[in-house]
Image (cartoon, rainbow, N blue to C red; front, side, top):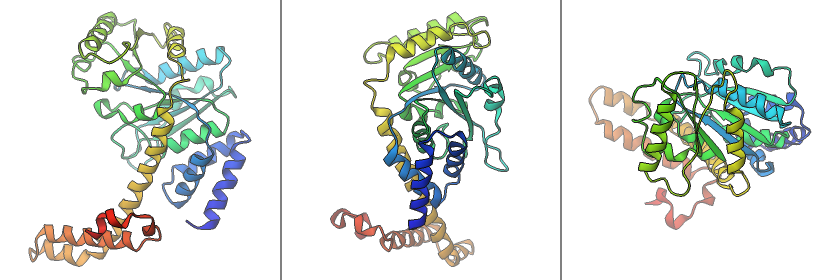
Length: 332
Protein backbone atom coordinates (compact mmCIF):
# COMPACT_ATOMS: atom_id res chain seq x y z
CA UNK A 1 0.00 0.00 0.00
CA UNK A 2 1.32 3.44 -0.90
CA UNK A 3 2.36 5.47 2.18
CA UNK A 4 0.36 8.48 1.04
CA UNK A 5 -2.83 6.39 0.85
CA UNK A 6 -2.32 5.21 4.43
CA UNK A 7 -1.67 8.78 5.57
CA UNK A 8 -4.75 10.06 3.76
CA UNK A 9 -6.86 7.31 5.33
CA UNK A 10 -5.59 8.13 8.82
CA UNK A 11 -6.35 11.81 8.24
CA UNK A 12 -9.89 11.07 7.08
CA UNK A 13 -10.59 8.88 10.10
CA UNK A 14 -9.30 11.64 12.39
CA UNK A 15 -11.69 14.12 10.77
CA UNK A 16 -14.48 11.55 10.91
CA UNK A 17 -14.22 11.38 14.69
CA UNK A 18 -15.27 15.04 14.88
CA UNK A 19 -18.76 14.03 13.81
CA UNK A 20 -19.12 16.16 10.70
CA UNK A 21 -21.83 14.75 8.42
CA UNK A 22 -20.04 15.86 5.25
CA UNK A 23 -16.87 14.01 6.30
CA UNK A 24 -18.91 10.88 6.96
CA UNK A 25 -20.57 11.14 3.55
CA UNK A 26 -17.15 11.43 1.86
CA UNK A 27 -15.81 8.40 3.73
CA UNK A 28 -18.83 6.32 2.73
CA UNK A 29 -18.32 7.36 -0.89
CA UNK A 30 -14.66 6.28 -0.84
CA UNK A 31 -15.67 2.96 0.69
CA UNK A 32 -17.96 2.36 -2.28
CA UNK A 33 -15.13 2.70 -4.83
CA UNK A 34 -13.63 -0.75 -4.26
CA UNK A 35 -10.04 0.30 -5.02
CA UNK A 36 -6.77 0.86 -3.12
CA UNK A 37 -8.23 3.94 -1.42
CA UNK A 38 -11.06 1.78 -0.13
CA UNK A 39 -8.67 -0.84 1.27
CA UNK A 40 -6.52 1.78 2.99
CA UNK A 41 -9.51 3.46 4.56
CA UNK A 42 -11.21 0.22 5.58
CA UNK A 43 -8.03 -0.95 7.30
CA UNK A 44 -7.72 2.30 9.25
CA UNK A 45 -11.38 2.20 10.25
CA UNK A 46 -11.01 -1.35 11.58
CA UNK A 47 -8.14 -0.21 13.81
CA UNK A 48 -10.00 2.84 15.10
CA UNK A 49 -13.61 1.72 15.42
CA UNK A 50 -15.41 1.51 18.72
CA UNK A 51 -18.06 -1.20 19.02
CA UNK A 52 -21.33 0.08 17.60
CA UNK A 53 -24.83 -1.31 17.89
CA UNK A 54 -26.18 -2.76 14.67
CA UNK A 55 -29.75 -3.84 14.02
CA UNK A 56 -30.58 -5.50 10.72
CA UNK A 57 -34.03 -5.40 9.16
CA UNK A 58 -34.47 -7.99 6.44
CA UNK A 59 -37.23 -9.88 4.69
CA UNK A 60 -38.88 -10.59 1.34
CA UNK A 61 -39.82 -7.89 -1.20
CA UNK A 62 -43.09 -6.16 -0.40
CA UNK A 63 -42.87 -6.72 3.36
CA UNK A 64 -42.74 -2.98 4.02
CA UNK A 65 -39.21 -2.93 5.43
CA UNK A 66 -38.49 0.68 4.47
CA UNK A 67 -41.77 1.90 5.96
CA UNK A 68 -41.03 -0.06 9.12
CA UNK A 69 -37.53 1.44 9.37
CA UNK A 70 -39.02 4.92 8.97
CA UNK A 71 -41.51 4.19 11.75
CA UNK A 72 -38.69 2.87 13.95
CA UNK A 73 -36.75 6.09 13.33
CA UNK A 74 -39.74 8.15 14.48
CA UNK A 75 -40.13 6.08 17.65
CA UNK A 76 -36.40 6.05 18.42
CA UNK A 77 -36.14 9.81 17.99
CA UNK A 78 -39.04 10.26 20.43
CA UNK A 79 -36.89 8.35 22.91
CA UNK A 80 -34.06 10.80 22.26
CA UNK A 81 -31.75 8.39 20.41
CA UNK A 82 -29.66 9.45 17.39
CA UNK A 83 -29.89 6.84 14.64
CA UNK A 84 -28.07 6.16 11.39
CA UNK A 85 -29.49 4.05 8.57
CA UNK A 86 -27.68 2.14 5.84
CA UNK A 87 -30.41 1.26 3.36
CA UNK A 88 -29.35 -1.23 0.71
CA UNK A 89 -31.31 -0.75 -2.50
CA UNK A 90 -31.27 -2.77 -5.71
CA UNK A 91 -28.35 -1.67 -7.88
CA UNK A 92 -28.80 0.27 -11.09
CA UNK A 93 -27.84 -2.01 -14.02
CA UNK A 94 -26.12 0.99 -15.64
CA UNK A 95 -24.14 2.61 -12.82
CA UNK A 96 -24.11 -0.05 -10.08
CA UNK A 97 -25.42 2.57 -7.63
CA UNK A 98 -28.48 2.28 -5.43
CA UNK A 99 -31.84 3.18 -6.98
CA UNK A 100 -32.61 5.15 -3.78
CA UNK A 101 -36.11 3.81 -3.22
CA UNK A 102 -35.47 3.44 0.52
CA UNK A 103 -34.21 6.99 0.87
CA UNK A 104 -37.32 8.36 -0.84
CA UNK A 105 -39.51 6.55 1.71
CA UNK A 106 -37.56 8.15 4.59
CA UNK A 107 -37.87 11.75 3.40
CA UNK A 108 -39.78 12.78 6.53
CA UNK A 109 -36.52 12.55 8.50
CA UNK A 110 -34.48 14.73 6.11
CA UNK A 111 -34.36 17.78 8.39
CA UNK A 112 -33.67 15.82 11.59
CA UNK A 113 -30.01 16.23 12.55
CA UNK A 114 -30.38 13.18 14.80
CA UNK A 115 -30.90 10.96 11.75
CA UNK A 116 -28.41 10.04 9.04
CA UNK A 117 -29.58 7.98 6.05
CA UNK A 118 -27.35 6.58 3.33
CA UNK A 119 -28.56 4.42 0.44
CA UNK A 120 -26.23 1.81 -1.01
CA UNK A 121 -26.34 -0.40 -4.08
CA UNK A 122 -26.35 -4.14 -3.46
CA UNK A 123 -23.98 -4.60 -6.44
CA UNK A 124 -23.32 -8.27 -7.21
CA UNK A 125 -23.75 -9.69 -3.74
CA UNK A 126 -26.27 -12.50 -3.48
CA UNK A 127 -26.58 -12.20 0.29
CA UNK A 128 -28.39 -8.87 0.31
CA UNK A 129 -25.44 -6.80 1.57
CA UNK A 130 -23.37 -4.10 -0.09
CA UNK A 131 -19.65 -3.88 -0.79
CA UNK A 132 -17.63 -2.89 2.30
CA UNK A 133 -20.70 -2.71 4.52
CA UNK A 134 -18.62 -3.74 7.59
CA UNK A 135 -16.27 -0.78 7.07
CA UNK A 136 -19.24 1.54 6.61
CA UNK A 137 -20.65 0.38 9.94
CA UNK A 138 -17.26 1.12 11.53
CA UNK A 139 -17.33 4.60 9.98
CA UNK A 140 -20.76 5.27 11.47
CA UNK A 141 -19.56 4.32 14.95
CA UNK A 142 -16.46 6.51 14.72
CA UNK A 143 -18.55 9.44 13.49
CA UNK A 144 -20.66 9.29 16.63
CA UNK A 145 -23.65 7.22 15.54
CA UNK A 146 -23.97 4.57 18.28
CA UNK A 147 -26.96 2.84 16.68
CA UNK A 148 -27.08 1.77 13.02
CA UNK A 149 -30.09 0.24 11.31
CA UNK A 150 -29.20 -1.82 8.24
CA UNK A 151 -32.05 -2.50 5.84
CA UNK A 152 -31.24 -5.04 3.16
CA UNK A 153 -32.60 -5.43 -0.33
CA UNK A 154 -35.37 -8.00 -0.46
CA UNK A 155 -33.86 -11.01 -2.18
CA UNK A 156 -35.54 -13.80 -0.25
CA UNK A 157 -33.67 -16.90 0.89
CA UNK A 158 -30.17 -15.71 0.01
CA UNK A 159 -30.55 -12.63 2.21
CA UNK A 160 -28.61 -14.09 5.14
CA UNK A 161 -25.23 -12.32 5.05
CA UNK A 162 -26.45 -9.43 7.16
CA UNK A 163 -27.32 -11.77 10.05
CA UNK A 164 -23.58 -12.24 10.64
CA UNK A 165 -22.93 -8.50 10.78
CA UNK A 166 -25.76 -7.45 13.08
CA UNK A 167 -26.02 -7.59 16.85
CA UNK A 168 -29.78 -7.98 16.62
CA UNK A 169 -31.58 -9.21 13.49
CA UNK A 170 -35.23 -8.57 12.66
CA UNK A 171 -36.93 -10.73 10.03
CA UNK A 172 -40.01 -9.08 8.53
CA UNK A 173 -42.86 -11.14 7.10
CA UNK A 174 -46.22 -10.07 5.72
CA UNK A 175 -49.57 -11.73 5.05
CA UNK A 176 -50.43 -12.60 1.48
CA UNK A 177 -47.13 -14.17 0.40
CA UNK A 178 -48.59 -17.63 -0.10
CA UNK A 179 -46.17 -20.38 0.91
CA UNK A 180 -43.14 -18.09 1.20
CA UNK A 181 -43.01 -18.43 4.98
CA UNK A 182 -43.20 -22.22 4.83
CA UNK A 183 -40.50 -22.52 2.17
CA UNK A 184 -37.95 -20.29 3.85
CA UNK A 185 -34.46 -21.73 3.75
CA UNK A 186 -33.78 -24.00 6.71
CA UNK A 187 -32.04 -22.06 9.44
CA UNK A 188 -33.12 -18.58 8.36
CA UNK A 189 -36.00 -18.44 10.82
CA UNK A 190 -33.73 -19.41 13.71
CA UNK A 191 -31.14 -16.78 12.77
CA UNK A 192 -33.53 -13.94 13.49
CA UNK A 193 -33.67 -12.52 17.02
CA UNK A 194 -37.10 -10.98 16.46
CA UNK A 195 -39.85 -11.80 13.96
CA UNK A 196 -42.20 -9.07 12.80
CA UNK A 197 -45.38 -9.62 10.83
CA UNK A 198 -45.89 -6.23 9.21
CA UNK A 199 -49.08 -4.87 7.61
CA UNK A 200 -51.10 -6.26 10.49
CA UNK A 201 -54.19 -4.49 9.14
CA UNK A 202 -54.34 -7.01 6.30
CA UNK A 203 -56.33 -10.24 6.61
CA UNK A 204 -54.24 -13.21 7.66
CA UNK A 205 -51.64 -11.35 9.76
CA UNK A 206 -52.57 -13.26 12.91
CA UNK A 207 -52.42 -16.54 10.98
CA UNK A 208 -48.89 -15.79 9.74
CA UNK A 209 -47.82 -14.93 13.31
CA UNK A 210 -49.19 -18.24 14.59
CA UNK A 211 -47.49 -20.12 11.75
CA UNK A 212 -44.15 -18.54 12.61
CA UNK A 213 -44.49 -19.40 16.28
CA UNK A 214 -45.42 -22.97 15.38
CA UNK A 215 -42.50 -23.42 12.99
CA UNK A 216 -40.03 -22.04 15.52
CA UNK A 217 -41.28 -24.54 18.09
CA UNK A 218 -41.13 -27.45 15.62
CA UNK A 219 -37.62 -26.59 14.47
CA UNK A 220 -36.48 -26.64 18.07
CA UNK A 221 -34.47 -23.41 18.09
CA UNK A 222 -32.07 -23.56 21.03
CA UNK A 223 -32.72 -21.35 24.04
CA UNK A 224 -35.68 -19.00 24.35
CA UNK A 225 -37.94 -18.68 21.33
CA UNK A 226 -37.55 -15.36 19.49
CA UNK A 227 -40.55 -13.07 19.92
CA UNK A 228 -43.08 -12.84 17.09
CA UNK A 229 -44.71 -9.41 16.91
CA UNK A 230 -47.21 -7.70 14.63
CA UNK A 231 -46.88 -4.14 13.34
CA UNK A 232 -48.61 -1.71 11.03
CA UNK A 233 -45.71 0.51 9.99
CA UNK A 234 -47.93 3.03 8.20
CA UNK A 235 -49.67 3.93 11.46
CA UNK A 236 -46.86 3.03 13.88
CA UNK A 237 -48.94 0.38 15.62
CA UNK A 238 -46.72 -2.15 17.37
CA UNK A 239 -43.46 -0.25 16.76
CA UNK A 240 -43.00 0.73 20.42
CA UNK A 241 -43.47 -2.92 21.36
CA UNK A 242 -40.78 -3.81 18.81
CA UNK A 243 -38.34 -1.34 20.39
CA UNK A 244 -39.17 -2.76 23.82
CA UNK A 245 -38.36 -6.24 22.52
CA UNK A 246 -35.00 -4.98 21.21
CA UNK A 247 -34.22 -3.48 24.62
CA UNK A 248 -35.27 -6.73 26.24
CA UNK A 249 -32.73 -8.66 24.19
CA UNK A 250 -30.03 -6.07 24.81
CA UNK A 251 -26.58 -5.58 23.33
CA UNK A 252 -24.36 -5.99 26.38
CA UNK A 253 -23.45 -9.66 25.95
CA UNK A 254 -23.36 -9.61 22.15
CA UNK A 255 -19.82 -9.44 20.77
CA UNK A 256 -20.22 -11.66 17.73
CA UNK A 257 -21.39 -8.84 15.47
CA UNK A 258 -18.17 -6.87 15.73
CA UNK A 259 -16.00 -9.95 15.14
CA UNK A 260 -18.13 -10.97 12.15
CA UNK A 261 -17.80 -7.48 10.67
CA UNK A 262 -14.00 -7.68 10.86
CA UNK A 263 -13.98 -11.12 9.22
CA UNK A 264 -16.42 -10.01 6.51
CA UNK A 265 -14.25 -6.98 5.76
CA UNK A 266 -11.16 -9.18 5.36
CA UNK A 267 -13.11 -11.61 3.17
CA UNK A 268 -14.26 -8.75 0.94
CA UNK A 269 -10.71 -7.47 0.47
CA UNK A 270 -9.34 -10.96 -0.24
CA UNK A 271 -12.13 -11.56 -2.74
CA UNK A 272 -11.24 -8.35 -4.58
CA UNK A 273 -7.51 -9.18 -4.57
CA UNK A 274 -8.10 -12.69 -5.97
CA UNK A 275 -10.49 -11.28 -8.57
CA UNK A 276 -7.76 -8.88 -9.74
CA UNK A 277 -5.23 -11.72 -9.92
CA UNK A 278 -7.70 -13.76 -11.96
CA UNK A 279 -8.24 -10.89 -14.41
CA UNK A 280 -4.47 -10.51 -14.85
CA UNK A 281 -4.02 -14.26 -15.36
CA UNK A 282 -6.76 -14.39 -17.99
CA UNK A 283 -5.09 -11.57 -19.91
CA UNK A 284 -1.75 -13.38 -19.79
CA UNK A 285 -3.37 -16.61 -21.03
CA UNK A 286 -5.22 -15.03 -23.95
CA UNK A 287 -3.25 -17.16 -26.43
CA UNK A 288 -4.29 -20.37 -24.68
CA UNK A 289 -7.91 -19.21 -24.62
CA UNK A 290 -7.72 -18.62 -28.38
CA UNK A 291 -6.26 -22.11 -28.88
CA UNK A 292 -9.09 -23.63 -26.85
CA UNK A 293 -11.60 -21.74 -28.99
CA UNK A 294 -10.00 -23.35 -32.05
CA UNK A 295 -10.20 -26.77 -30.43
CA UNK A 296 -6.43 -27.15 -30.32
CA UNK A 297 -6.28 -27.63 -26.55
CA UNK A 298 -8.74 -28.70 -23.87
CA UNK A 299 -10.44 -26.07 -21.70
CA UNK A 300 -9.03 -27.81 -18.60
CA UNK A 301 -5.54 -27.06 -19.93
CA UNK A 302 -6.47 -23.37 -20.03
CA UNK A 303 -7.80 -23.58 -16.46
CA UNK A 304 -4.51 -25.10 -15.29
CA UNK A 305 -2.53 -22.38 -17.07
CA UNK A 306 -4.62 -19.67 -15.41
CA UNK A 307 -4.21 -21.33 -12.01
CA UNK A 308 -0.42 -21.42 -12.45
CA UNK A 309 -0.39 -17.73 -13.38
CA UNK A 310 -2.41 -16.84 -10.27
CA UNK A 311 -0.06 -18.89 -8.07
CA UNK A 312 2.98 -17.19 -9.60
CA UNK A 313 1.41 -13.80 -9.03
CA UNK A 314 0.68 -14.53 -5.38
CA UNK A 315 4.15 -15.97 -4.76
CA UNK A 316 5.77 -12.84 -6.20
CA UNK A 317 3.57 -10.54 -4.09
CA UNK A 318 5.24 -8.34 -1.49
CA UNK A 319 3.05 -10.10 1.10
CA UNK A 320 4.21 -13.61 0.14
CA UNK A 321 6.67 -13.65 3.05
CA UNK A 322 3.71 -13.67 5.45
CA UNK A 323 2.72 -17.14 4.25
CA UNK A 324 3.61 -20.25 6.25
CA UNK A 325 6.02 -21.96 3.83
CA UNK A 326 5.44 -25.44 5.26
CA UNK A 327 1.68 -25.22 4.76
CA UNK A 328 1.73 -22.93 1.72
CA UNK A 329 -0.53 -24.56 -0.88
CA UNK A 330 1.35 -22.73 -3.62
CA UNK A 331 4.39 -24.94 -3.02
CA UNK A 332 2.57 -28.28 -3.26
